[in-house]
Length: 284
Image (cartoon, rainbow, N blue to C red):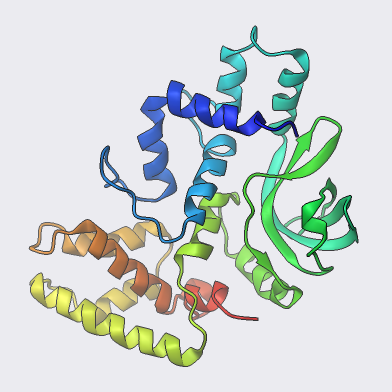
Protein backbone atom coordinates (compact mmCIF):
# COMPACT_ATOMS: atom_id res chain seq x y z
CA UNK A 1 0.00 0.00 0.00
CA UNK A 2 1.27 3.47 -0.88
CA UNK A 3 2.64 5.39 2.10
CA UNK A 4 0.18 8.01 3.35
CA UNK A 5 -2.96 6.25 2.07
CA UNK A 6 -4.43 5.87 5.57
CA UNK A 7 -2.98 9.03 7.15
CA UNK A 8 -4.95 11.05 4.57
CA UNK A 9 -8.16 9.48 5.91
CA UNK A 10 -7.23 10.33 9.50
CA UNK A 11 -6.50 13.93 8.52
CA UNK A 12 -9.84 14.13 6.72
CA UNK A 13 -11.74 12.72 9.70
CA UNK A 14 -10.26 15.08 12.31
CA UNK A 15 -10.50 18.17 10.07
CA UNK A 16 -13.75 17.62 8.14
CA UNK A 17 -15.78 15.43 10.52
CA UNK A 18 -15.29 17.43 13.72
CA UNK A 19 -18.86 16.83 14.88
CA UNK A 20 -18.10 13.11 14.95
CA UNK A 21 -14.77 13.14 16.80
CA UNK A 22 -16.16 13.35 20.35
CA UNK A 23 -18.97 10.94 19.51
CA UNK A 24 -16.47 8.42 18.13
CA UNK A 25 -14.24 8.65 21.21
CA UNK A 26 -17.18 8.17 23.56
CA UNK A 27 -18.32 5.14 21.58
CA UNK A 28 -14.91 3.48 21.28
CA UNK A 29 -13.89 3.98 24.90
CA UNK A 30 -17.39 3.22 26.25
CA UNK A 31 -17.33 6.49 28.17
CA UNK A 32 -19.98 9.19 27.74
CA UNK A 33 -18.06 11.33 30.25
CA UNK A 34 -15.35 12.13 27.70
CA UNK A 35 -15.67 15.86 27.06
CA UNK A 36 -13.73 18.50 25.06
CA UNK A 37 -10.63 19.68 26.87
CA UNK A 38 -10.59 16.77 29.33
CA UNK A 39 -7.43 14.64 29.03
CA UNK A 40 -8.12 11.09 27.94
CA UNK A 41 -6.49 8.65 30.34
CA UNK A 42 -5.35 5.52 28.49
CA UNK A 43 -4.57 2.18 30.12
CA UNK A 44 -2.06 1.41 27.37
CA UNK A 45 -0.61 3.52 24.51
CA UNK A 46 -1.87 0.81 22.13
CA UNK A 47 -5.44 1.98 22.77
CA UNK A 48 -4.85 5.12 20.69
CA UNK A 49 -3.59 3.05 17.74
CA UNK A 50 -6.62 0.78 17.98
CA UNK A 51 -8.92 3.80 18.04
CA UNK A 52 -7.29 5.27 14.93
CA UNK A 53 -7.81 2.00 13.04
CA UNK A 54 -11.39 1.54 14.28
CA UNK A 55 -12.48 5.06 13.36
CA UNK A 56 -11.42 4.55 9.72
CA UNK A 57 -12.77 1.06 9.07
CA UNK A 58 -15.56 0.44 11.61
CA UNK A 59 -17.02 3.70 12.91
CA UNK A 60 -20.27 4.89 11.37
CA UNK A 61 -20.51 8.66 10.99
CA UNK A 62 -23.64 10.56 12.02
CA UNK A 63 -24.74 10.52 8.38
CA UNK A 64 -24.54 6.72 8.32
CA UNK A 65 -21.41 6.49 6.17
CA UNK A 66 -17.98 5.07 6.92
CA UNK A 67 -15.03 7.48 6.76
CA UNK A 68 -13.69 5.89 3.54
CA UNK A 69 -17.06 6.34 1.79
CA UNK A 70 -17.34 9.95 2.95
CA UNK A 71 -13.81 10.72 1.78
CA UNK A 72 -14.44 9.17 -1.64
CA UNK A 73 -17.72 11.06 -2.09
CA UNK A 74 -16.18 14.43 -1.20
CA UNK A 75 -12.94 14.02 -3.18
CA UNK A 76 -13.98 12.27 -6.41
CA UNK A 77 -12.59 14.98 -8.64
CA UNK A 78 -9.32 15.27 -6.72
CA UNK A 79 -8.37 11.59 -6.71
CA UNK A 80 -6.82 9.63 -9.55
CA UNK A 81 -8.56 6.49 -10.77
CA UNK A 82 -5.88 4.37 -9.08
CA UNK A 83 -6.40 6.17 -5.78
CA UNK A 84 -10.17 5.71 -6.00
CA UNK A 85 -9.64 2.02 -6.78
CA UNK A 86 -7.33 1.66 -3.76
CA UNK A 87 -9.87 3.15 -1.34
CA UNK A 88 -12.74 1.12 -2.82
CA UNK A 89 -10.65 -2.04 -2.37
CA UNK A 90 -9.85 -1.16 1.26
CA UNK A 91 -13.55 -1.27 2.05
CA UNK A 92 -13.28 -5.05 1.63
CA UNK A 93 -11.72 -6.00 4.95
CA UNK A 94 -12.28 -8.26 7.94
CA UNK A 95 -11.03 -7.97 11.51
CA UNK A 96 -10.53 -11.17 13.46
CA UNK A 97 -8.39 -13.92 14.95
CA UNK A 98 -6.05 -15.42 12.36
CA UNK A 99 -3.87 -18.50 12.85
CA UNK A 100 -0.64 -18.80 10.86
CA UNK A 101 -0.70 -21.87 8.61
CA UNK A 102 2.21 -21.27 6.19
CA UNK A 103 5.12 -18.83 5.95
CA UNK A 104 7.37 -17.69 3.11
CA UNK A 105 10.05 -15.54 4.68
CA UNK A 106 10.10 -12.01 3.33
CA UNK A 107 7.06 -12.54 1.09
CA UNK A 108 3.79 -13.81 2.54
CA UNK A 109 1.80 -15.49 5.30
CA UNK A 110 -1.10 -17.90 4.87
CA UNK A 111 -3.61 -17.15 7.62
CA UNK A 112 -6.72 -19.07 8.65
CA UNK A 113 -9.71 -17.09 9.91
CA UNK A 114 -10.53 -18.81 13.21
CA UNK A 115 -14.16 -17.74 12.94
CA UNK A 116 -15.08 -19.16 9.52
CA UNK A 117 -12.07 -21.24 8.49
CA UNK A 118 -11.32 -19.17 5.37
CA UNK A 119 -7.69 -19.08 4.23
CA UNK A 120 -5.98 -15.82 3.25
CA UNK A 121 -2.58 -15.42 1.57
CA UNK A 122 -1.40 -11.98 2.66
CA UNK A 123 1.58 -10.10 1.28
CA UNK A 124 3.88 -9.40 4.24
CA UNK A 125 7.58 -8.71 4.72
CA UNK A 126 8.63 -7.77 8.24
CA UNK A 127 6.08 -9.96 10.03
CA UNK A 128 7.35 -13.14 8.39
CA UNK A 129 10.70 -13.13 10.20
CA UNK A 130 9.32 -13.65 13.72
CA UNK A 131 6.22 -15.61 12.70
CA UNK A 132 5.74 -19.23 13.73
CA UNK A 133 3.23 -21.71 12.32
CA UNK A 134 0.28 -22.11 14.70
CA UNK A 135 0.62 -18.72 16.34
CA UNK A 136 -2.37 -16.39 16.34
CA UNK A 137 -2.58 -12.80 15.08
CA UNK A 138 -5.45 -10.51 16.02
CA UNK A 139 -5.79 -7.97 13.24
CA UNK A 140 -7.38 -6.88 9.98
CA UNK A 141 -6.94 -8.35 6.51
CA UNK A 142 -7.81 -6.00 3.68
CA UNK A 143 -7.80 -5.94 -0.10
CA UNK A 144 -5.20 -3.74 -1.80
CA UNK A 145 -6.41 -3.92 -5.42
CA UNK A 146 -4.83 -7.20 -6.60
CA UNK A 147 -3.75 -8.79 -3.29
CA UNK A 148 -4.45 -8.89 0.44
CA UNK A 149 -2.40 -7.36 3.25
CA UNK A 150 -2.53 -7.02 7.00
CA UNK A 151 -3.80 -3.47 7.36
CA UNK A 152 -4.39 -1.36 10.45
CA UNK A 153 -2.26 -1.29 13.57
CA UNK A 154 -0.29 -4.22 14.93
CA UNK A 155 -2.56 -6.20 17.23
CA UNK A 156 -1.93 -8.82 19.94
CA UNK A 157 0.12 -11.86 18.95
CA UNK A 158 -0.29 -15.18 20.74
CA UNK A 159 1.62 -18.50 20.70
CA UNK A 160 -0.10 -21.60 19.35
CA UNK A 161 -0.76 -22.84 22.90
CA UNK A 162 -3.29 -20.02 23.27
CA UNK A 163 -5.34 -20.98 20.18
CA UNK A 164 -7.82 -23.18 22.03
CA UNK A 165 -8.67 -20.54 24.59
CA UNK A 166 -8.96 -17.87 21.92
CA UNK A 167 -11.52 -20.06 20.12
CA UNK A 168 -13.53 -20.15 23.35
CA UNK A 169 -13.39 -16.36 23.55
CA UNK A 170 -14.70 -16.16 19.98
CA UNK A 171 -17.73 -18.26 20.94
CA UNK A 172 -18.70 -15.65 23.54
CA UNK A 173 -18.48 -12.64 21.21
CA UNK A 174 -21.95 -11.62 20.02
CA UNK A 175 -20.92 -8.62 17.89
CA UNK A 176 -18.63 -8.14 14.87
CA UNK A 177 -14.94 -8.24 15.80
CA UNK A 178 -13.19 -4.88 15.79
CA UNK A 179 -10.36 -3.03 17.58
CA UNK A 180 -12.99 -1.89 20.09
CA UNK A 181 -13.08 -5.46 21.38
CA UNK A 182 -9.30 -5.92 21.16
CA UNK A 183 -8.86 -2.85 23.36
CA UNK A 184 -9.84 -4.98 26.34
CA UNK A 185 -6.82 -7.21 25.76
CA UNK A 186 -4.77 -4.17 26.79
CA UNK A 187 -7.15 -2.67 29.36
CA UNK A 188 -7.45 -5.87 31.36
CA UNK A 189 -4.48 -6.27 33.69
CA UNK A 190 -2.44 -9.46 33.30
CA UNK A 191 -1.55 -11.16 36.60
CA UNK A 192 1.09 -13.88 36.62
CA UNK A 193 -0.61 -16.41 38.86
CA UNK A 194 -3.85 -17.51 40.52
CA UNK A 195 -2.45 -16.23 43.80
CA UNK A 196 -2.19 -12.75 42.32
CA UNK A 197 -5.78 -12.98 41.09
CA UNK A 198 -6.93 -13.93 44.60
CA UNK A 199 -4.89 -11.13 46.13
CA UNK A 200 -6.37 -8.68 43.61
CA UNK A 201 -9.90 -9.82 44.45
CA UNK A 202 -9.30 -9.25 48.17
CA UNK A 203 -7.92 -5.77 47.55
CA UNK A 204 -10.82 -4.84 45.26
CA UNK A 205 -13.34 -6.15 47.82
CA UNK A 206 -11.87 -3.97 50.58
CA UNK A 207 -11.93 -0.81 48.43
CA UNK A 208 -15.38 -1.52 46.98
CA UNK A 209 -16.94 -2.12 50.41
CA UNK A 210 -15.38 1.12 51.65
CA UNK A 211 -16.80 3.05 48.68
CA UNK A 212 -20.26 1.57 49.19
CA UNK A 213 -20.16 2.56 52.85
CA UNK A 214 -18.96 6.11 52.10
CA UNK A 215 -21.72 6.47 49.50
CA UNK A 216 -24.37 5.26 51.97
CA UNK A 217 -25.38 2.80 49.28
CA UNK A 218 -28.15 0.27 49.95
CA UNK A 219 -26.17 -2.19 47.80
CA UNK A 220 -23.87 -4.78 49.34
CA UNK A 221 -20.69 -6.02 47.75
CA UNK A 222 -22.32 -9.44 47.37
CA UNK A 223 -25.08 -7.84 45.28
CA UNK A 224 -22.42 -6.22 43.08
CA UNK A 225 -20.78 -9.62 42.57
CA UNK A 226 -24.17 -11.12 41.71
CA UNK A 227 -24.66 -8.51 38.96
CA UNK A 228 -21.21 -9.32 37.57
CA UNK A 229 -21.80 -13.06 37.77
CA UNK A 230 -25.16 -12.87 35.97
CA UNK A 231 -24.30 -10.08 33.52
CA UNK A 232 -25.68 -10.23 29.99
CA UNK A 233 -23.68 -7.36 28.50
CA UNK A 234 -22.12 -3.94 29.06
CA UNK A 235 -25.44 -2.54 30.29
CA UNK A 236 -24.85 -4.40 33.55
CA UNK A 237 -21.40 -2.83 33.84
CA UNK A 238 -23.04 0.62 33.75
CA UNK A 239 -25.69 -0.57 36.19
CA UNK A 240 -22.88 -0.97 38.73
CA UNK A 241 -21.40 2.42 37.85
CA UNK A 242 -24.85 3.95 38.44
CA UNK A 243 -24.78 2.71 42.04
CA UNK A 244 -22.53 5.69 42.79
CA UNK A 245 -24.63 8.28 40.91
CA UNK A 246 -25.70 11.26 43.02
CA UNK A 247 -23.39 10.29 45.88
CA UNK A 248 -20.51 12.10 47.53
CA UNK A 249 -18.14 9.91 45.54
CA UNK A 250 -18.35 11.87 42.31
CA UNK A 251 -15.01 11.22 40.60
CA UNK A 252 -16.08 9.26 37.48
CA UNK A 253 -12.53 8.12 36.65
CA UNK A 254 -12.09 6.54 40.09
CA UNK A 255 -15.49 4.82 39.89
CA UNK A 256 -14.87 3.53 36.36
CA UNK A 257 -11.47 2.15 37.39
CA UNK A 258 -12.91 0.39 40.45
CA UNK A 259 -15.87 -1.12 38.57
CA UNK A 260 -13.56 -2.20 35.71
CA UNK A 261 -11.28 -3.97 38.20
CA UNK A 262 -14.21 -5.79 39.82
CA UNK A 263 -15.67 -6.69 36.41
CA UNK A 264 -12.35 -8.13 35.22
CA UNK A 265 -11.33 -9.99 38.38
CA UNK A 266 -14.57 -11.69 39.46
CA UNK A 267 -16.38 -14.66 37.82
CA UNK A 268 -19.05 -14.40 35.09
CA UNK A 269 -21.49 -17.21 34.33
CA UNK A 270 -21.23 -16.21 30.66
CA UNK A 271 -17.56 -17.25 30.82
CA UNK A 272 -18.32 -20.60 32.48
CA UNK A 273 -17.55 -19.23 35.91
CA UNK A 274 -14.25 -17.63 34.94
CA UNK A 275 -13.24 -13.99 35.21
CA UNK A 276 -12.24 -12.05 32.07
CA UNK A 277 -8.71 -11.80 33.45
CA UNK A 278 -8.52 -15.60 33.43
CA UNK A 279 -9.66 -15.75 29.79
CA UNK A 280 -7.17 -13.37 28.19
CA UNK A 281 -4.62 -12.61 30.83
CA UNK A 282 -2.76 -15.91 31.16
CA UNK A 283 0.92 -16.31 30.47
CA UNK A 284 1.77 -19.13 28.08
